[in-house]
Amino acid sequence: MKLTIERAALMKALGHVQSVVERRNTIPILSNVLLTADHDQVSFSATDLDMEILDDGVAQVDQPGQITAPAHTLYEIVRKLPEGADVSLSFTGEDPRLQIQAGRSKFNLPVLPAGDFPVMSSDGLSTPIAIDTNDLIRLIDKTRFAISTEETRYYLNGLYIHTVMDGGQALLRAVATDGHRLALAEMPAPEGAAGSPGVIVPRKTINEVRRLLDDAGESVDVQISAAKVRFEFARAGSKGAALTSKVIDGSFPDYLRVIPRDNAKIMTLDNALFAQAVDRVATISAEKSRSVKLAIEPGRMTLTVRNMEAGQGVEELEIDYDGEPFEIGFNARYLLDVTGQIGGEIAEFRFADPASPTLVLDPTDPGVKYVLMPLRV
Image (cartoon, rainbow, N blue to C red):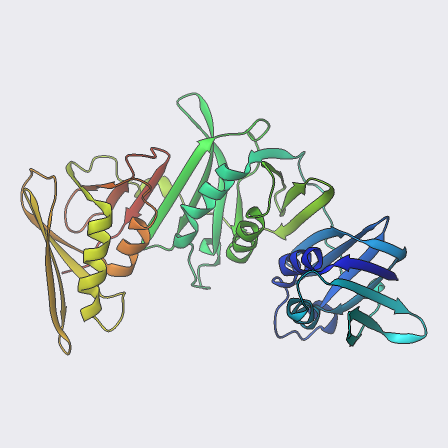
């Protein structure tokens, strides 16, 4: 194998694929990236056996071939090469190492046979469903913060993507919850999406998809089966990137049961001022997860955080509310996560009582809902 490629193209493709490689691996081949050179193009592939990412770049291929090399080391070498450099990669039977050359820089890396590299099959996947890139970014950004990190309830460690019928309209919906809060975002279902199986896409996969979306074209092709999901990010002049991942084998809970429908106490306020106030009073606590108490009365909210060691923080805000006064407590970090997703200036809170779930809405985006479980105050 022998090829020459621009550093920028090599850096982008390697940057996309190397992030899937775990830093510590008991299986040596999983620390490597697979390089495949053919037809003026070189493709790169990396896997952790649960997810596989492929990306490619235009190259001058003098001798086609395949080989694997340490992913992180190769990426770090390319990252530190001067901008605009042409990078030569070559592997011949004479030297059992991958040779990298750019200007006066030369490196030799150990290799493992390409035949040992595991390839994830794409059997059983549906026909591609084209989703607008900005729509997919919105679904992910509005919900992924609520994905659980607790391994005990593994079925919550991902984003539940599925289609539903609502009022005669097919919707593509993404839902995440960790049991303390819930985030839901939806959009009109793309053509061909109705009837696709609902899948729980793992947190790591969602984060990698989000990174790839920054360099994607206008739309992304998504293929779904009961066991796998595949995202294809086409780009002009190349095949682009593709990510194939196993999905979480489990049943997502009936989330509709926890979304309040009859919360009658409605409060609206300036979202940015509220987030700043929560952040300030939470400084008093040793960690952001400490409870913040909201005392709500007509026209005014008082935020209070108490810490036996650090003292007390209190702040007042003007609000639009005309119901009965009450007090309710929330995890300060959860409040900040939700306010960070509100797109407009105003946030709308709908309460039932201090012990029941609270619904948070974004008046500028009716396709999103957030649910927060209160804390005792």
